[in-house]
Amino acid sequence: MSAVIDESVSPSRFFAQLITGFAALALLIAAVGVYGLLAQSVAVRRREIDIRLAVGAAPHQVAVAFLLRGMALVAVGLLLGAAGSLAATRVLQSQLYQVQPDDPLTLAVVGALIAVVALVAMALPALRAARLDPVRVLRVG
Image 1 (cartoon, rainbow, N blue to C red):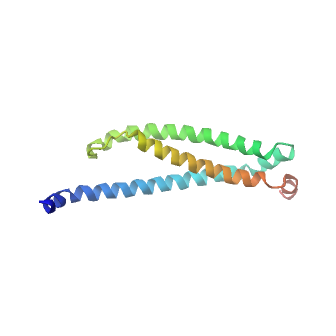
Image 2: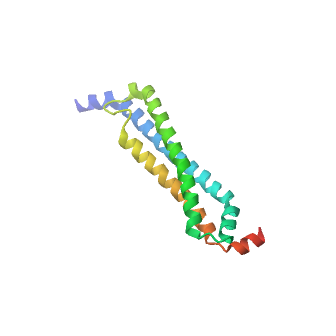
Image 3: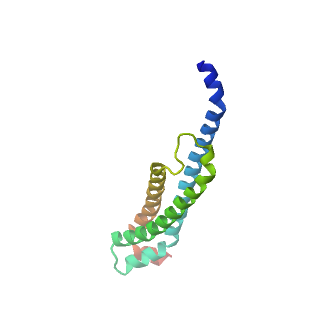
């Protein structure tokens, strides 16, 4: 009997595993994209960081200013993404079995993961730029 049950649910199980794999891949691509975008935005503004340091701003003040500005953008993106995902779940609701389409835990975990990736993406280049000697960087640039 268990073999008959396994055979009857195997297509559903396969599609569930396939969707899970695609979802994990999409999350990885989103995290890499957010990291690349935010790291590039901080790198582009490196000269601004150097000028702020040259006129007397403390390195931690500059890093915090960039982190706050970037996290505000991330918060807006997460809100829009959550709204979009809740709208898209209505389409997928017929494909789900014993799973809520608007699972708050999943939304929270994915949002937290993207926020952490964004924080690291902004913090590393900002702290690296803040550690440089601004006079030397301004003289070279």
